Length: 268
Image (cartoon, rainbow, N blue to C red; front, side, top):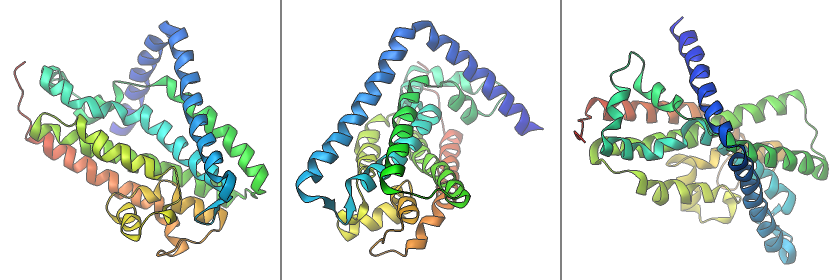
């Protein structure tokens, strides 16, 4: 019953946020267009890169687009749910985080539900177009098993990227500053997902698999769907993407709650 109560509360909170965002419809539409344009620019860069060489680490242009689309789709959901965690340090420094502690709901849930970024639908539009285009070009046969695996892998990717944002934000409980770590850790890790891991040195691939598991966001699942080899790793490793996402996020949540237990108001 408690879970149902939190789900109902979450939808009430985000519906209020959506109504607030829709008060500025022009800015909302322009941000969607801006996101689509930005991701299209990266796709064009890939095409230019492969124009002469045709393949990059055995991955063709359309295979890389498929890889990229999975990353963007999971990141879109992650932005909606967790991106505002990177500004947790601002709330702590201003003393406004205290309001999340005086209400009779889980502070983590309350902080997560306070914002719902509608503009991220621009990423969904881009990903959907790419999925349809690439599926036709690569003649991917979408069986029910592949569709379910893709959906589970996307959920895993959301949890991995969301977990990293949560971990980064938790640093603020000890240092009162954490947003800089987003650019040091999260931004480079996300850039890794734009290209197949096979092009990177072996040590980078192992880090992306077992330390900062962004390889499970799109590379390993895409290799399963496209039936491509993954040097240094068994192809079946991609099937663990949902489990890796769940475990990683639970670790991040526990660290965040540990930091919360040591939180002391700045008194601002």
